Length: 503
Image (cartoon, rainbow, N blue to C red; front, side, top):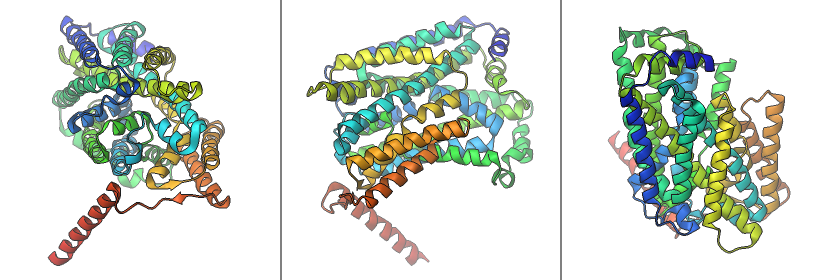
């Protein structure tokens, strides 16, 4: 693969204008990040930024966090090679997950003052559960940051003929620097700048590819004639569809347990603002996913039959003109940086707040510890990225460290289910053991759906078999959530009555 990329990249030398655009983006990102985080003095400010963000800022930082550089590459490549299988799983699964997360966020008032999801878990199930959640999150997000750095290395080599190791190290160093020094406020405002960058670059690229096609009707013909876009052939019991269904189940799980998403929810002023952020963000992210899938589909119509490793080099060398190549490089960089910085900030907060603080017995976590850990983990993720090959496998592998462990207890807690510490720890152990066993027995197939099911079965089964107290918690009708639910029921009843009267 490296030989193919290097050979294709050699055909088109980098133009000074492209390098200038790319360098300007990096410099502006660093300036914005460093200037926005100057007033960060405490760990709470480092984690939540003062909780004074407007809804549009939260929406943008939410979308930027999820619009990753790896997501662009995986989206284009897998739409091209897997067509409808990947589109159904990813393009619709993740936005639906964010929408569902928005519904759950309105119920998270009791968790809004926690700095991390690990602290929220610990408030219910104790110090051991808190530390386990923090450790598994750090392992997972370290892999996710590595995925973003890997995407950078792949794109920079094709775009600018730059040595992947050196160029990615420079870009990763900028992310680590402003994320470690400025905290979440620096992350949020660089996300705005990065969102604007890739929000322009991706649609422009799609329009250029469409315009470059000799006969745009090729796209319609591909859609009509390709068996991979025929629902009657796609849906069924064959392995490809079952794999896509498994991937959809992975993507569609509400994301309130994800460290960076929980952090965005906690950054909101109240649960209603958090719900609006995720609802609006799901629609915006859906448009972004459709645009990325459309690029992969246009490439399939333009030049079918390419190998997976040839897709991105072909995209760059045949459709990126002078100027557009620099903009695309900045856009991919923005996608990767906006995801990596959020993950680094979230795990550094968890290390200081949920591992060092409980073990040391101190009342407050240290912002210095968080900053140092952000630097160390960023460098470790960079080294991991330079030795991995398959982005999707690395993404699924990193997810297997925390989704099976604490996603189910957290989601169930938000829904109103509580149990004892021993049952919660048993369910976490069951989820992790199932994930490891499944991966070993089925050659690293997606272990997340079965492991989360095992977690849920143990959580509910052990709770009722052991006769544990608590269980499902009723919502106080006089609480903000109770009043909101009552208002929602009344609104739905009014709509149903209106429909019946219209009929």
